[in-house]
Length: 285
Image 1 (tube, helix red, strand yellow):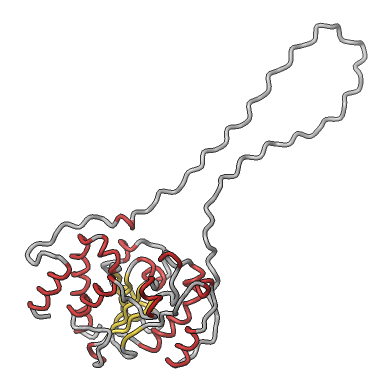
Image 2 (tube, rainbow, N blue to C red; image 1 turned 60 degrees about the vertical axis):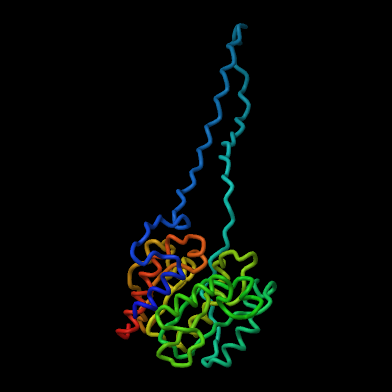
């Protein structure tokens, strides 16, 4: 990568070309401590009744049958409901781009179909050596039916340009294909839920199979955890080489552009990831 392109990208991202600013730990990656539930104290034992002072009869009357005592039930702590993890979805997915697009466009496999404006299939060269995968469409993407078109998408485009890539590139050697884990916008731009991710799993798997990229880059925690089938935080997944699928495709994890807009100090780490991506593609991954 020439110095002029590197300097231009660093300037766009707000990174000092001569000095890397210190990076603070990702506040979104801090793990919450497990909730503790205080044990209910046992019920206080009733005070003993005073002994009677009247003389005891010579023959004691028959004792009444004992009434079984019911042990007090401990209070059940209230739990926050979490969506169940659905079993892997088995569906006959078309093996060609035209059929796959049509199937995604008419999909009603999860509740997101009721609130979407458009499905967001993906964009880029269908034989690109680089495949970039985000988590899900936002409001802008839902309106246009194209991934990464808002502010985060503009930053992603600049990042790709810095390593000589573009979503509109006709030359496969310099092209990229961009997709998301889910194809419909989650309401309020929330994270996709497990059942929604599972509903779209066959579509993304087929896209990866059709593109056959030399390198996959997952943007953010949701995409990383989906592709690696793990619940580890992004901080533990980033910075190492992973492998995906039956072809053992190299997989790298980096920050989502939306997170970089909120946490500009992490842009230096993202720049390091981009340089690694550039080296891997240059070496054929």
